[in-house]
Image (cartoon, rainbow, N blue to C red):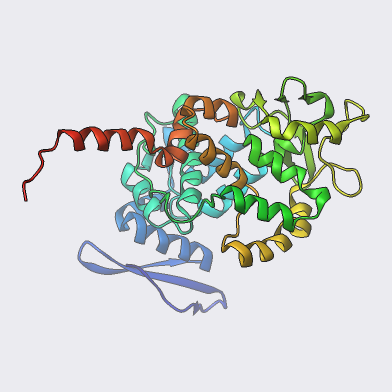
Length: 372
């Protein structure tokens, strides 16, 4: 491990910063003009080792291929800047991840110097939830794939690196029973009840449900067309855009028990009006709804049931109920708008018991019975 010495005052009055580290059996000092440069070098020594850290300090010869390469951080930012088919809000979110996760020493490593071991060490040092690490790794892998496509590096060393597992039993998802959902609806004021009931009854996303217009509903057929959703914008209000993925643009089934209430809700309203609105007649927005409606209700909900679900847990509850009915996962995938069946399997596969129960019964019938 490298160490950063206290700053030194030079004869000319300037300040220098020295890093000491072990290299080739000796205690070696390296001096820098700024503390930031010294800290960056120290981090590089700790993560990459002294030899590679020293190599990063060397100035490449003019005209060599290394002058054309970027650092990891530069490549990630380049990748984000040139992504197509995403909203300004999504781009801003990616930039925030890049700033938080790709600082030195990984971010200052040249692309051609990056190894699979570097990525593995970076993954192991990440803080926070496994999902957060997975999101950052996905951004890194996408940036490296772009570099491969552009001929900057021969391969993507982040691809296939094993990530921390998400524990499905960690309580991250809160699944409600029918009586618990009924309790939640009684806690909410009557005008707010149709929205969470629709979320639990269809499994669609908050931003999709709040973007539904009267024209998107077909009460007679018991279905809704998902063609748009609210998207975060960079530093501004949310904007309407296409759903999250290609398969999120879909038609979903509405339970018969919801149809009469929906018909009354949209009766006499213009086709372009939003189905679910706040007290001012505007679309329900995520932040104000959570702060003004949902969180206050959760205090009473927790006291009554011991559970404090997020709004998104209504979507998880829908999936759990659908699985209980024996609905195949591909059908649930289509209803919920997952781009890949693997997402459905990874998220809800642990809830499927019917096949395992049948397997246990079959094996049990084959096992010998012990006498006595």
